[in-house]
Length: 361
Image 1 (spheres, rainbow, N blue to C red):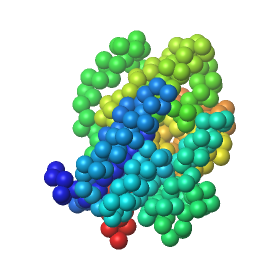
Image 2 (image 1 turned 60 degrees about the vertical axis):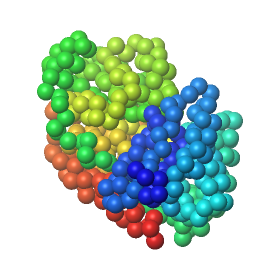
Image 3 (image 1 turned 120 degrees about the vertical axis):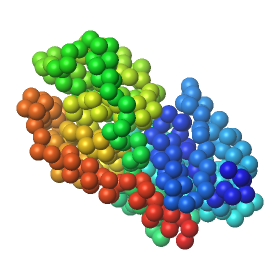
Image 4 (image 1 turned 120 degrees about the horizontal axis):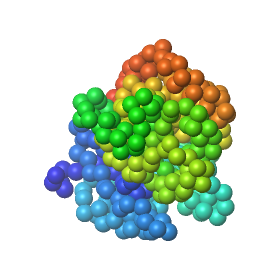
């Protein structure tokens, strides 16, 4: 792509093995399909002591002066993306959009939480467009970041349907996987996909699912990597959970294989304020595969009640719902309605047709 033709640059504040970069990548792909010239800057992988933030700052500084662009989009309001863009705007008239897709500092307490909140707070009000995925975030952004409401625009969490299809080569995948795991063909597989970080909420599942796994012919697969992968492996080992397998990091196309061969996918959010502001990418991805999903009803998950097999918010209700579903091979085909709902509402291509008009206004 020639520099002179570059229209839009997209920067991810977090490493390339994060949901933040995945959102950046899907956003860029959809905008490109809708006619814009797009450059998505690939950030480094996560580093010890969060050094990737420092590396990303200088990488972004390099790219914003290397490329010519009229529009910039930063995913998450961190200084490693926003400060370089402010510097660029001193020299060139550009439109800048910052995307706030979570309340990052709400997941932990202490000094790290305080620092995270402080370094994000000053920036969003200075930019042209501020987007959010969950409607609950709108008032929060206005109050927390002092952003003019006229700058706000909802940018829903979408799904790239190009990779969620049944043409994925999985003919022998399940047979080979069962052999690798040492389980038989009658074993029912539970899939949990996630970027394993502080937001994963996997601990409460591991605290409560082992009795079910031991009592029934069920097996749990945790598909995905992240900074807390080894922590959760150790967590499962301490709880003597034997019928479990951690895949480690997988590209989305590989996660599709695990999801397709599973009997059920699970989503569970702890009932805490930060989760009221989240949007579940994995729930959308499961339904894009017409996968049967058992979830609880915290936050945005309530919106999907017609399309998933939903429990109350507490973990005991969730485990009972999961067991009932698997024991009875229950299905009323709501996952098929969920597929239609997600394809019509959360297909990135459809989302970006509307968002492109906002960017170019």
